[in-house]
Image (cartoon, rainbow, N blue to C red; front, top):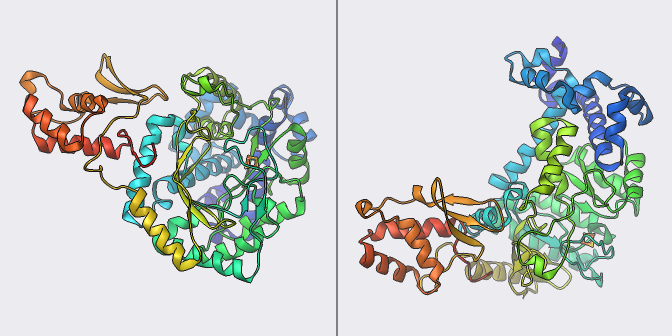
Length: 522
Ligand code: SF4
């Protein structure tokens, strides 16, 4: 980078001014457009590799430097790239295009991690402990992809059902039967509900969304409710739409809101190649800079069907497709900024037994339907015959008005969001967890993911001379599915003389890690 570009790299948006900010946004959008083309258009990566200047010209990106783009996206200069990024003089060595694109990808992942680890943590102590435990449970239940789930604390549906009927719908959305239309009464109720959510959950509620098993753009009044949401939380909620092309100017206006108001990203689910081509034609690269394109059609170079893994899904005989491809891509992109490497990564993922999280749900909290005025609590899990949509949820509880909503919400937190191990219940481990001997000692291993917990490192036994590992003994007792917490402690104390404090500590750790079944949900 030259001196000016290096100075800009150290400035905020306010410091650099609108003109420079806009120039950088256009630059980033154009580079992202290359990645979008790779994702959406069959043969695009090969065309780029074969003749980069011609490729850039074909897609109106000729003002990008072909050599710089090859440096960003191709493997051929991988070593050189690594040296640049690990050098003390990284800002002298890399071109501005590469710096800005790397910054863009890293920022996106940083914000996702912020949401998961801090932003979406509610102020309510019970709700926070419950969410944290379920987030941890998903590590063993869903696998590594869990890192990309933000575990939002709430979602609000403004419709009953969905008009689109995508074949890849991971939530088996029902047909659209009702809309929550904007009128004085509904606007008041909506504002009251949001205000209660803010009171009870804090700013974490701001990072919810206004769709679940619904299509946000089905509701003609979506924007009016979004205004209320913005007034209460100071944020605009993220949208994932499978009908961005139903009214392009409406979608464009929603996308442009991200320029003016705090928000995160939006996502277009592209159901076929034609939709992808429309998105790339109708929206400029800078308009799509904060829009993720999720390819849900088989001829997309990065299409990755949900694979049927060694779980109950095999018996169900389903073969679900899902939108996690893009997430995996983003992970790899952050690491490598390299398209062919990405392709290899995707191919590698296809070969992995446990790539499929078995759910598309990234909400771990409240599902509020404004049409039928109901609240449920839901949490993601691996799809199975019992949980065909990859979620477990409580029965719906009805509310009538804002005050009633507050009461019911608090009652549900008390009833379902257990912060501690229930005292008088029989405890057991989830049935996908098994004990396994390995070179590193005894492990607790999940058959649904790559999760492995070395039990040898947990707990300190006062009976070391007898080689009893308290953690293993606790797990064995849990697997017997016969004892309450106190009974486990008493029997291990009597049998092996293990200190109760050590046993209670271990049981609490297993509970907090989401390894002990929560009978309210499973
Ligand atoms: S638009 Fe969303 S909710 Fe509706 S069918 Fe498609 S994936 Fe399901």
